[in-house]
Length: 54
Image 1 (spheres, helix red, strand yellow):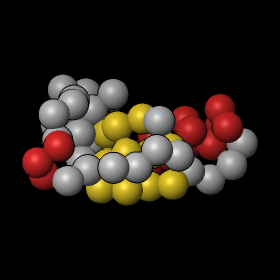
Image 2 (cartoon, one colour; image 1 turned 90 degrees about the vertical axis):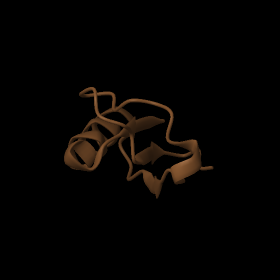
Image 3 (cartoon, helix red, strand yellow; image 1 turned 120 degrees about the vertical axis):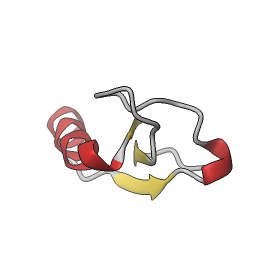
């Protein structure tokens, strides 16, 4: 699972597909749980890309 900002959502999807060879589940992170930073920059993460969801 990866977390990312809106700007890096497409990049996170590409990285996931390259690693897992299948499409990821994409979900928004609830505002009250947005504690992590994007894995590609320092912005607040807005999306989760992978199989785990809140």
